[in-house]
Length: 350
Image (tube, rainbow, N blue to C red; front, side, top):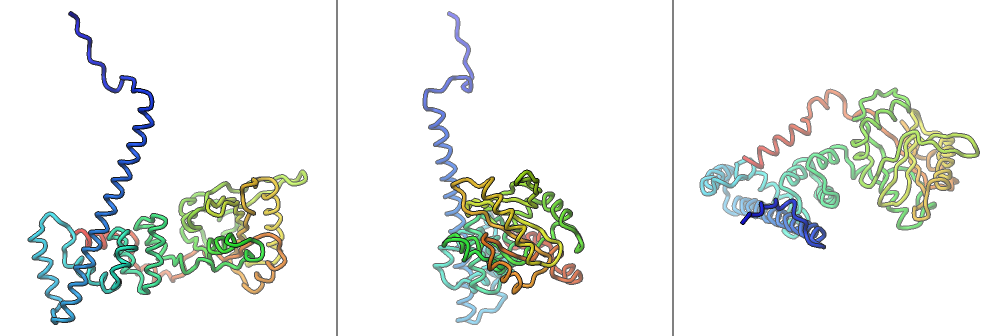
């Protein structure tokens, strides 16, 4: 009797509906893994907060000095040799963490959703509790990595949001106008482009395309790049939009025009024309009205406000900076993002 050779399992045709079921199972497993990881992280952060709170209370009530932290680090590492995080440096961070967040509810509901490394960045780079919480909530909302969180804090992202001169309140209906206003900022920081102060529009555009990922990070969440020098034909004549984006949350096109000099009222006329063309030739019925962002090297805010009053299209005006605001000698004295992360990593893992 001849035995049939075993057929590899991968070659066996699965029953009807198996593929869809397998996809569903994979999704469930990934979701369960993510929930488990979040639960473990919340418990760890809460444990660190409780340890920090205990240290604070005992030092306050019983007069324990700083030496007790060194002794505690030794004893905890001896008791839990396989568990990282009980270095003297990290215990000091726990103490500072509990001091910065005295409310356990905030730790459990907000900060506890972030990895410990994120909490250390918030703790060491921000002193104002309200701003610290605002950055924590934004990091949770958009899933920022520690590196991205670091960049946004260093560039004062939240402090710059909603600061551009706009006519959105007059030209857009609520809540679209509020969302659009908060989407724009002033100034925009383009020091990562690597071009000099005297760069013209084309040089800046080329650098933006080369660094599009970093540029999108500076623009903010929701922006999708459509193209550079996007051609539009109006009445048989060709025109070219400097930079065109689509905002996923605003559900509209965003036309960005660059000016390598100071803002002039006539700039709004050109941008107004481009917005009309995009609304007519590219916008679908499902899209909201196209928004314009005029980026200038400098601007007089009063002049910009007057220029936008009679514009019938939603436009924002903001400055951009091609070099960092800090003097070179001060920049050189600051640690890099990589160095900060290395130091935080040593403190958290030692």
